[in-house]
Amino acid sequence: MQLLILFISENEQFDQNKLVDIVKNIPGIENIREGEFVGSILEFEFREGEDFTTVRLSGDRETISISGLGDASLKIALSIRKRYPQPIIAVDSDYSFELVLDKINSLDQLRQKILDSSYQTVN
Image (cartoon, rainbow, N blue to C red; front, side):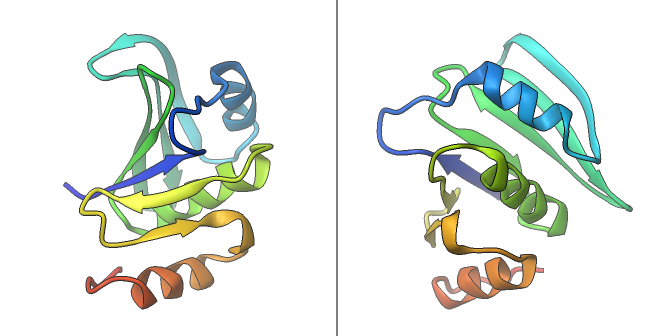
């Protein structure tokens, strides 16, 4: 499965408490769970209509992984970026693109940036 991976910068960690506070205020967030999971310490789902994605904060708190590259995945990435106080970088699990999200303000703009910087088709 394709993943969208968010990070701040090399070896920099997300603030878990801040991230939890942020996602609690995003419409469409469901099933927030904190604990020791396989490879993560925070998990939740984001639902937009019939589309949904699973989001996980890694155990080292250096990355947020988002399943898929569909609309729900891209929307939750932008929602986190808008609310998190530091610049966020996004890559896909195939490393076919790397984008700084700070200057991307819409789903269409994000889709176009991904297409412009990769060889894959994003639905």
